[in-house]
Image 1 (cartoon, rainbow, N blue to C red):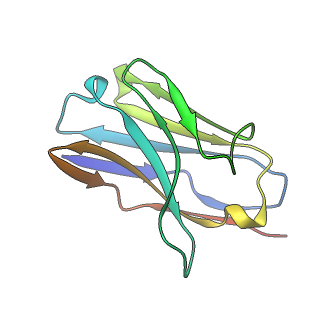
Image 2 (image 1 turned 135 degrees about the vertical axis):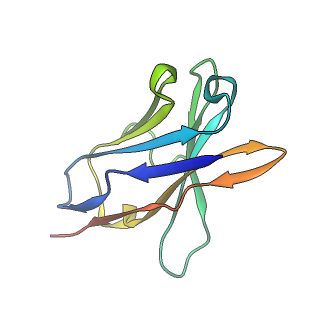
Length: 113
């Protein structure tokens, strides 16, 4: 089982980024996928989830700005981030649960002018 995130980087406030998480080693289409983030000195927090049927849920802090989607043919889950703020700076991870939690290594997002 492997989860590999990509797409992070440095962006100015108000900008956008799209993160990707490519999954392998399991039946991706059967599982809810989650995006989480961890800022320095903070606990890891939920950004949002997408069910196997495409139903999404978001943390209040990102509602209306972030969108999670999935492409089951590509075994990939996406996190589209718009109107980025400095407080969105964090390492972003994808996760799923299959008996236990599986995490990707994360991708750094830095929002700064």
